[in-house]
Length: 113
Length: 114
Image (cartoon, rainbow over all chains, first blue to last red; front, side, top):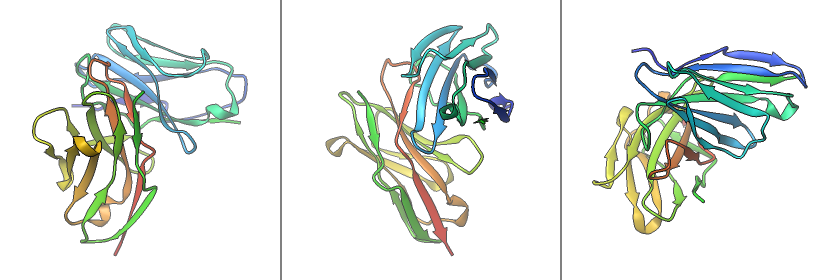
């Protein structure tokens, strides 16, 4: 069974640009969550989607947005990139709606120049 | 609001020695608790979880954790550490009826010396 797939693995952007990251969950998983990991702030929750609906949202500015498609695949978008957006972005999928173990992808490493 | 504290940023143990990583949580009700491990350049792998029932839970790779409500703790243990256990370990809490959102501790980096 394939795991959570995140693309691309590495990305370099410049300030002011926008970026879209993709996540394909484990087959049959309907919940997708996104996390930002930085050395200074650690792992922080961005948002969670279940059946194409945003269920939870973390404390991030509106420049961070996401969506989920009918096949459960998810994308997150960051507009007007700032240097502080440099991070490892992790996607996790769960089989159920609530309190399920999450399975993580290997992440997308985003570097802002 | 939920919070998770991992008091030890770094821990170094000798190969073959026992290991205990500490985790304390703050939450009003009984939370859902998890331990994850992350190797460099990779995502997080679930080691074990506690939802209810037996307070001693067994996980993969020989790890176990004990939930102690009175101490708001969920410490991770392993009786004999292997060099391949060197990684960063994260404790996380999820809220009942709170979707699948997790709040993570800051992590503990485990170094294993031979």
